[in-house]
Image (tube, rainbow, N blue to C red; front, side, top):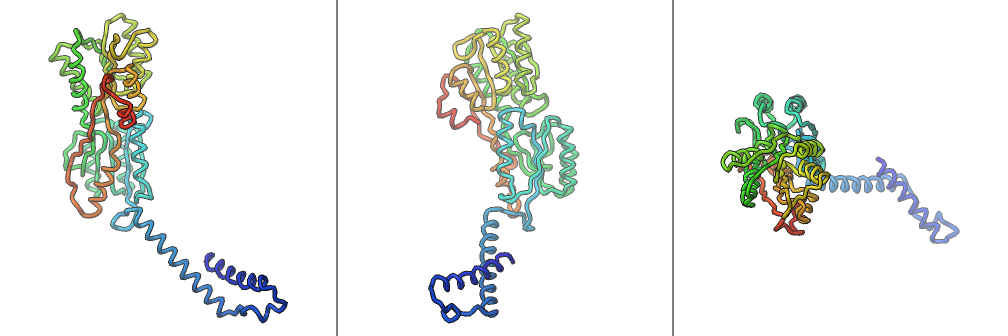
Length: 363
């Protein structure tokens, strides 16, 4: 209505303006009279123009935002670990938030916790909210069967991302994850290849029970058993740099000898290095202590480039586009081609890494 009113006023203003610009002393004979009929015609034309504009806008919005079959936004509940947990998690959360927006056809709600029971409570709340899709990055691999069955009974599709869980595959549509066991094995194979005379390892674990912790720990435990390596200490620092620093400082204070830091993420490796620096213990390529991390934060890869660290294992945080494609397939009536999608990942050696690698793979 505002557009119609303004259009009519502008039309009247144009008529008056033309009279003034003509410079005639008899405006009533040089300008066409503004009648009620002409005003109605102007209003009708303006209304048509307004409708055309609205239709064009509506078409553009429909093209940009794939909606559910009902024409409404697709409701998703996203359960993730705390974004402050690590640089990896910050990148992962950012990737999800940039994808699951109203502009892309989604009505997204987010819940965060490093505790499995709190995540499960959040999942139950999302089910009550009648969402369409439940996306989960589980804090722990166990304990999900009941809530996933509830989701299935409610007609809610479940998609796992980042981490696997111990549940029957029939309870979820797809799993877009890293192969944590492979990440650990790649790192351990690299460490074996260093040919050290002895392996005395400080092992800094992530949150116990998580897929990342299990995968990265499992490979090392096997090597310790099969190759006779020594674990000077094996403790969880829960992905936290300060806790890692405290653990390493405790080992230094004890006087025990070590030559490898195997940290299950970059932040813990950073904390470990802070303790080494404080004690003036050299680390990196050709130095006293080998430093290993995971996740490939850009700053961590720069530590490799500067040869202050020795190894970093990639963990790819960008799963949102894969999930979006799966949802589009389901909404279009199609069948998801792969139940499990494994993210492509690699490990980086400080003696081989380039600036191009840092720019391309750093998160």
